[in-house]
Length: 251
Image 1: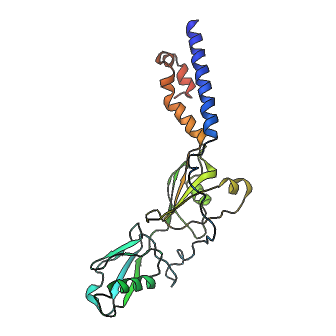
Image 2: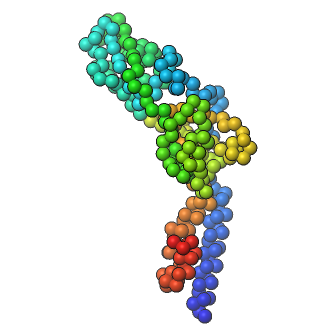
């Protein structure tokens, strides 16, 4: 009889703790400190899919050739990769920002950087290989991983391409990171509940190498904490009776 009373007392404590955690977590947002993703003046990322056009802007992981018209001894012998931070490194020149520029613009930047040691340099930049057009989806999605993107693809479409949200996803505060490898990445929250429930158009379309992170909701974190710490709350002899295992959903 005493054992039953003890078990009831413990489960009352556990139930009260669960209610407290759920109530506290339901009001908390794990990424509330992040600002909303800036959409003012934001335009779809045109040009990253129109490969080969004069207005194509280079992105990380593109590979280029650099040729000096009047100084061929300085031509790149191998393709030059654009690094994750958007820069390239050239022998005798150093580091130059490349991502976000067209090949013509980059050629002019290299010419300016070499003008002090070359006479009237003329630099031609050509693209040898285009970077894969991917975004990276992680967090509370069913199968985290990269997604090959199409022009106009939205965050919600990319998430569904990875199987959709898990039950513990914080769908109103999905984190979008752009230019993650640069010194000044753009980071912010986007609310995908509006697009899901109201069929509202999404304000953001994806660019290559964007990172989408779906955080765990407050309730999901509370449930995870309970499952992780339940064995510390309930004595081992009760688990031996199978009661604690039942409380943990049979795990």
